[in-house]
Amino acid sequence: MKRLFLAAAVLLAAGPALGVAEHEGNDYIREHGYQGSATCEECHEGTAKQFLTTVHWTHSSTAPRVENLDPGRAYGMKNRIYTMCNGNEIVNDLKRITSGEPGSKEFKYSGCNKCHPGDHLNAADSTGPAAEAAIDCLLCHSSAYDFRKRKVYEDDQGRVVLGQDRSTEAALAIAQPQVKNCMVCHEAAGGGVYIKRGFAFSKKTDAHAAKGMVCVDCHKATDHKIPTGYDPNNWANDGVRISCAGCHEDKPHADADYNAHTVRIACQTCHIPNTGGAFAKDFTRWTKGGDGFYEPTTLHKDVNETTPVYAWFNHQVANRPEFIGPKGSRGDGESKLYPFKIFQGKGYFDKKTGQLLSMDFGPPMATGDTLAGVASAAKILGIQEYEPVPGWQTIYFGSNHLVTKERALTCPTCHAPNGVLDYGALGYTAEETAKLTSAETYFDKAAANLKDEW
Image: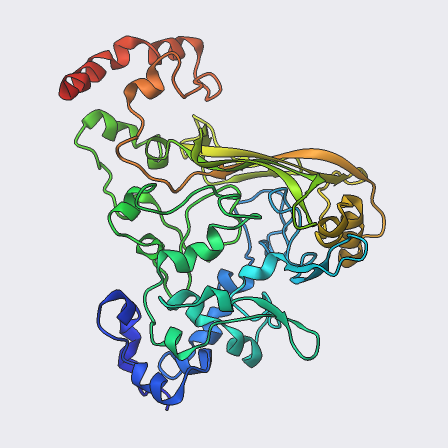
């Protein structure tokens, strides 16, 4: 049956739920049902094996732009430790956690790999026929996927399994990935909705969404390798990148002065004036919720409530135990000015090495005992000697969504004396700062814009 419907390979962007042409493989699915990736392979032979090499499956990659890393090792959600997620999939594998309340039988399933597009029995970096068969193709490619079926359960051998919607109904709605397919994982990363990135991709919050665009209109995949932008905190990637310039020309504005700024100022700086999400977390102090379980104490803001900090960025990343952020300077010839959300996380550092210690969330989630979580993680990782001391880590998150045209920064926003830019911190002299913040620089243009409003 291989290649029976090979012509259907070009129709992945179609689906009946979207009111467009039906996927040509649907007759086969109606006759034989949907058997996971094996059904997809009838047309897309070799795609499952190919997918196992992508970051969405491996959850890690080499990170050559990040300093102080082993160039031959892969880093990502699978094994990285930082204070937005003070653990990783190695120490926080998906598992049952029972409440520590005396006599309680309450439990929940928790783990960093709940977003992995497999069945948990075949985890990140797994390979071979079993891993290929475990791929949840419809999670991304069905417009009728029932996410309630993607629940965790234990099989008859007591193994923790991540469920999938492999219904014929979902399979008959094969389509280009829609916003919900992407955001079901990316929106809730970091411990809850809007916690990590702090953005909602909707018509009210993003200019691209308002035009009817979806995530993959910008993040266009080739062989399931999805391009990403540059973010000091986003280490794992498929080696392909996107930028605003991929769609917008070098001189995107009607105003010549604005166009002149694009040489040194990234589009995001003016067109993403706000973001949201967590700005501080304390993993040394967990708070008990109404369900009897504990969560790390978190401070966060809603979408569009956080004002960014601006810094030079040449796409190289400073990486130290206490700081992860952009490298760059005004004079290096490669940097542009970008907006960032500053996040500060508190965790335990090893006094012996100065490195951040990982935490198994099982013990503190059940009882609030954070040091028990550090001890469990150390045991899993084979760390025998360590001395935990609390400390803070600062992380710069890149602002790349919540794009706006109507609320974009204007001349006075940056050049007025009380504007958003700290010119001194950006490397400008006092004399240059005085000139850049003089009304002489922006007054005529701002006044002309006022006339347009009258």
